Image (cartoon, rainbow, N blue to C red; front, side, top):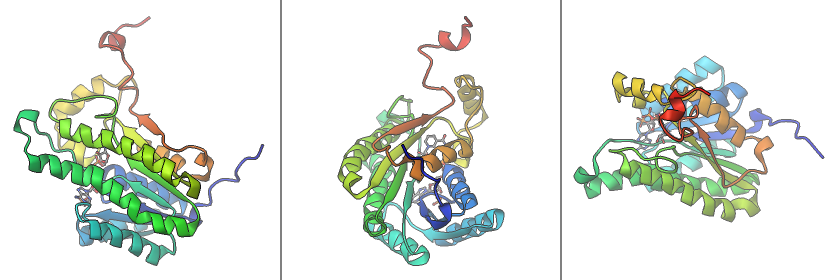
Length: 265
Ligand code: NAP
């Protein structure tokens, strides 16, 4: 039996899509605090550079910001090339960026569906593909997708297109994990429940209050709750885990019924 001495994060180069705020910012911050070189992305290059500068100052880490719209395949290819040029290699991809516009099924247009699938599903797939040459050159790789409980485990009125995109990510990761296993590249996903971010705050106080009451651990998640799970799945210690998804939801998907939340044994 052998135990790994622990990941030397100073040797690792990490890309975090959607790292300008929310969960992605939390993931980028944790990697930067460990000493990894981080490239975070957002749609706007100036905003991404500012977020990266703020994070570098806060952590003392090596962080750069790249403007990448996940609807643009060429920009995604350029992202991987630029991260490799700046940091010498790409070891970890956190395919995190995503959008969650609410729209009831009856009102959904083809354009609404296309946009959510393009950013959340196609964008993650293309980001993975773009990073493969660099990971193959590095001789290893860790890919962690940010999916959701919505779609893979639960449904929510108004988010059928979003749920389809998030469940689709898991179908993708299983095939990708098999294809990439021979190269030592693992592909896993985190499934956050409700996590306090700018995106979630936009849903309003009433939504947040109702959600909190459905979470057995009694609070909305923090970006750091997700970031710690991503860090583990990206570590050397997780070398034997691939094709899996880890739910991080404070127990939200656990109760069999509302009774299970209110009845005490
Ligand atoms: P958020 O606060 O709205 O942040 C979204 C991030 O994605 C931003 O950095 C944004 O960057 C980027 N982004 C949006 N559209 C993009 C596009 N077209 N191309 C490239 N980047 C784009 O969201 P969040 O709450 O942190 O969510 C992050 C991920 O977690 C998403 O995949 C979401 O589905 C998932 N998730 C969130 C929750 C939750 O409760 N918050 C729960 C389950 C799953 P710019 O605005 O700078 O372009």
